Image (cartoon, rainbow, N blue to C red; front, side, top):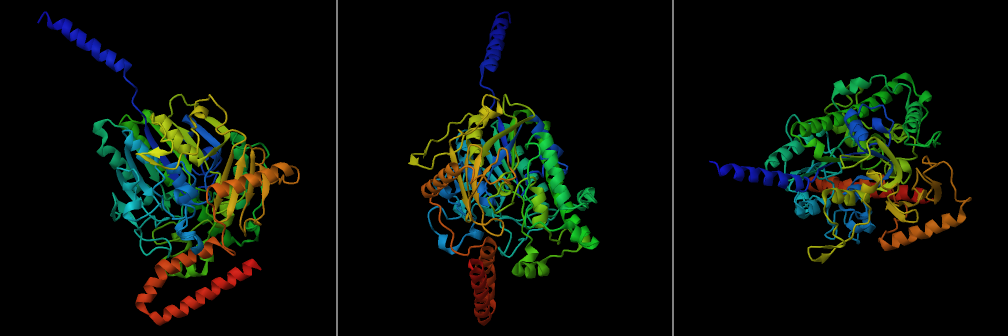
Length: 590
């Protein structure tokens, strides 16, 4: 007994020394991807929607005021997960909007190719558990599902979206809602609501592996606020009357708040989109209906925030919150499309959904916010989803939980979605693959880590002379320092190049091409080189993403059903649709 005391003391000292000098536990990583949120939808970015949990992450971390993604969902997600330009990782366009001329061409498979290594694969190789719940939209064949792209556990929606209350598609783009769990077709519970379910499954996966002490990477792809815009009625009713002054008043209020917060320059200019209707020209019944659409949208956003709050509470209860890095972003800007204005979709919607005022947001009802509210959601930016204006490409980005981070800080440096992968690898202590992975050459990362900016040791992420290109469905841009070269397809743009200083003029009001002809020409040359190096294909004459979506639905859903039911009818429909498409393309070219 006498000799055991020194031994016990020595063991205690050894244990203390081992604990003191051991490497700190690597952080967990949670990536929260909102769908179709406008720049100022988040409270911390100037919005009136109640997002207290996301706002708390903003106070504890850094808000990036000049963060850019692509103008549509799967191309952004492809770059978010790989750190590689979408034309090089296989998702040069969404399958639903890809013209036939591009099908099968390099970079245009519509799914991640084998040369693109996901951050999930790299984190899993480095000792992380990897989980994904919610929207995937990067493939739904066995070899393209998350289990083959680095995720240990997954419960995903493989398409662009689906109903938020039921297991069914939201549009005739699909014949069913394609949900998969761990690579196998899966079904939803009867009490399903998208944001709640996505968080429930993430917490289930985290809990299942807690005991082994390994860090986790959890990617939550919310369907909020993708169409159909749906939310619990009690949350929607919190906003009753909030939008009665209309979209123009909301756009101004959000612009002023964003500037007050320091996210935008004071007195920032704003364009009035041609698609924005005159609120005062509406009658009282029309105003009430339009206001309710935005109330539903706000309720959907608040509900997502509440579910994020549940996840945060769980991580706090399990002692993991203080060792978790959070990344919050939207995959693109606000959604302008009103499906009821598209004849083929309207017919399908009238059969499958209601749009009665008192049912908007509920099960069996369909609504969207349309271009006027979408412009307000993107305030003070120009444009929205699908197009290359700042309203389509600039979205909120919040990062918190990184050791040494500047709390409640706003960075106004240009940031890109491809910067996320290098950032996550650095905080995880994992070296980037450098263009080689498991003995083969792969696409190298093109982004830069945000950690120096997060910790305050640098002000810029990218050198001022670095050219960063963008193209999707014919709309294009090139960023260089504080300047942006941009062109957008009709009807939002005129398909001509324009030049803006988006640091001082993020609303893209003052075209500088006449004042800066050398920069204007030089950046066009930079874009041409970007397009050449990344295999960007020109769009076919008369291309329109909405018409292309209708053709996709016809080819993949409508025609197979009609062919099986009544072959003679098929020929008639093909002729009618073909004539309609030809007429619209001819009219557009003219």
